[in-house]
Structures are given as C-alpha cells and as structure tokens.
Length: 256
Image (cartoon, rainbow, N blue to C red; front, side, top):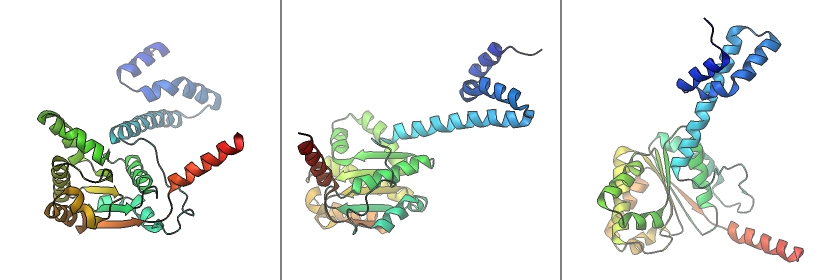
C-alpha cells in the first residue's frame, strides 16, 4: 500500500531526514518532467540528504570553534607587506602540520596579519572535519582563573582534546597572571604529549616571554615544547589596520 505525500513527509520527519524532506517535492516533479530512471532520482535525493547533513555539521564545527569570522587566504593583500612569509602561510593552510602533530608560532608587529592567517588556517581545518578551538589567549586565561574548579575542568577538556588549538594574541597585555602562566604551561605540555597541534600568535618576541610570564624557567619549558616540532613565522612590515583606518579617514574627508 503506497503512502500519501503527507505520510511520506511525516515518515521523513520521524527518521530525521530533513534534507530529503526539503527537496522531495522538487525531485519528484523533476523526475516526472525528465522521465528520469528511478536510481538516478533516488541518488539525487540521497545526495540532498548528505549535503544537508554536511552543511549542518560544518556549521556546528564553526560554532564550537570560537571563530568570529570565516577567514580565508583568498582576499589577503600580500602585496601590501611583500616580506611576509607567504609560502609558509600557504604551507600551514594545507594542514599538513596538524596531521604531523606540529605547532606554529606566528610572531610579529601588531596589525601585520598574524591573527588573520591563524584564523584562516583554523577555518580551513573546520572545513576539513577537524575539531578546532580558537581562544583570545589573555582574556580567556583571565576568565578561566575566576571560574570554579568544576567549570575549569569543563572548559579545559575541549582545549586539550581539539585537533587544533589557536592561542591568539598571547601576551597582548604584556604580563599575565601566575595562574594564566600555569594554564599555558599545562596546555602546551599536555598537547605536546598527545601530539595535538597548537598555533600561537603574539606581538612579543620569544626572548621576552620569561619577562611576561615572570618566570624564565617556565618560559624555557613552554618554548622547549612549543618549538620542538614547530614552524616559526615572523611577520614584519606595515600595519593593515593603520592602512584601513587611513583609507576610511580619507573616504570620510572626501565625503564631507
């Protein structure tokens, strides 16, 4: 006994096949108009479901990642700072370093594109099915210190387990608290043991990390593990943010 369209839709809803539900009527009309073979139509209907599930999964990965933009390398202005390590950035974007359990340190002047590159790599990782977490290092570490023990454990687990962890703008506020330094050391140590990748961006040269941690021994321990299997990218040149601000100012002046 055949089912009515309403019964079919109800069954699809019960089976949680929302991708098929969304396109079924169109696919039926398409099959009738083209007199398409059953298997051809059925394969398109299945593909609709797979596409819907993949899209939802990508959205979920993006939401969990902590990214605030879907950054890519497509529109990055490499000509503005020709000395940037372009080849090394594209090499990171292949995510080979994640597969090999390596790290990346992106160090350089403010506004030169460090965070942009790190976020483009992180977004590419979500598209490739990896579990990613992106943290604004100093502010997240400070908030973590104020949490209860149970909340700290709940926050910590995804940071340790993620395929890729990005610590953005480390030492932005220069000196960080002792508890933040201990958290940083623990994250680096645990992820080093499990060969899970870290990307760290910072305006501060690594030689000064001891000063910002207030502990040279701790800094040495952190850097030893971070740089053992690591790519070091140094960003020099002019600030993109200053360039964009100057462009906006010029535009406002011409409009007034």
